[in-house]
Image (cartoon, helix red, strand yellow):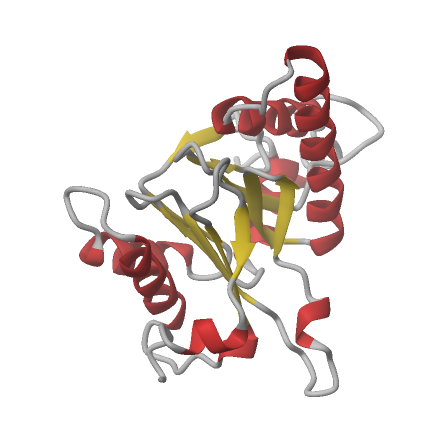
Length: 234
C-alpha cells in the first residue's frame, strides 16, 4: 500500500519512508518554474546571464533583478521566488562583509557559496519555517562558479543552469563548451545562446554580468547595446 503522501509533506523536518523531504522537493519545483539563469566559466572569470520575466510591456526591465552584487568581486544569479532570492542575497552580503572585517580580505567564492548553503540547509531541519524556493549561481572574480540549491547542496560547475528547462539549457552549454576555458566574449555568446536556444532574445529581456579588467577585478553589468552584439537575434 502506498504511504499517504500528505502525512509526510506537512513539515520540512519529516522524512518519508523512502527518505525524501517533500517540502524541499516542492521548493525545487518552484525553482524549475522560474525564468532561467546560466553561468559559464571563462579564462577571464565567470559570466552570469539571466532571462528577465517581463510579464507586461509596462514593466521597467531594469527593475526586474535577476543578478545581484554580493561584494565587489562576487555576484549571484537567481531562479525561483524573487523574494526568497532577495533574502539569500542579504545572507551572502552579511557573510562577505563579516569575512572582510575579520580577515581584511574578500571572501572566496567557495566559502561564500557554502555560507549561503549553510543558511539554506538550516531551513530544511528547523520547525516553524520553510525551505527557500530559489536556487543561486554564485560567481566570483577568482574564477569560482557554484550552485546553491533549496536543499543546501553546493556544486561547482564549469557551466551551469538553474530555473525552467535547466536540463535542456545545460545540454546546449555542454555542446558549446570547450575543453579549456575560452575568452570572455565566447562565454557571453555561449550563455546567451543557451538562454535563447531556439528562440530570439531581445537585449532588454536578459541581464548579463561579467568580471572587468580592473585591479582588483569587479563585476560589471553589460548595457543593452553591449548585449545586443552577442544575442543570437542580432
